[in-house]
Length: 250
Image 1 (cartoon, helix red, strand yellow):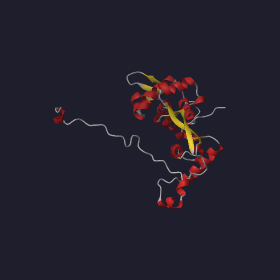
Image 2: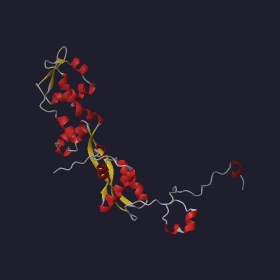
Image 3: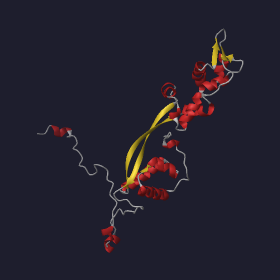
Image 4: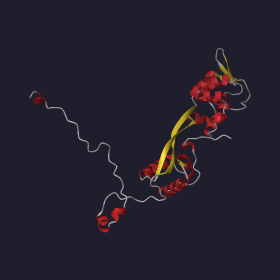
């Protein structure tokens, strides 16, 4: 049984999106049961994968969770090939642009886009769907009455559905390298697990010592938020250049 891998951008939301508080509670509850994969959690929660990563990093800052990155990749359609899923491949569009009794090459080029006129026409001739009759005025004619299957469109649909494994390797290589209708998407997902200070609820950490804490002694039991200092802050500046008139002094 094949397992389709699709990028976060291809994942459809399964449930209504949660608000921030509910999402944090759901993530901590899921982590309490076991390790959580960020993209799957985003899909199940109906939120963007980037939002889950932002929440994860926020929880990591409080040591509630920890994470490890995993590289993922999947084949995806280019913007150009996405139109072919709807409108048909360039070769199919070229075939349908030619009347049953044929037409002149000039009329054909005028009726279609540049891509269909060049790439589509070439692919249609290779598939023996169309042919060109040379003469005083070159003509384009159909070699078959109808197309049984638009193979290119079918294969692009399979890739869009995450089923690239169902395509013949040679055809797939042609779509990627020769026709450049398919690209390799890469991204990172994260395996999220319990951190050193894990709990099912985030406790708000005070940032400053207050007068009230000193008076009632509660400061002893508080865990203060760590300062996020800029690396190198407070470092001594390096010396500047010697003033020109001073260079001649002994």
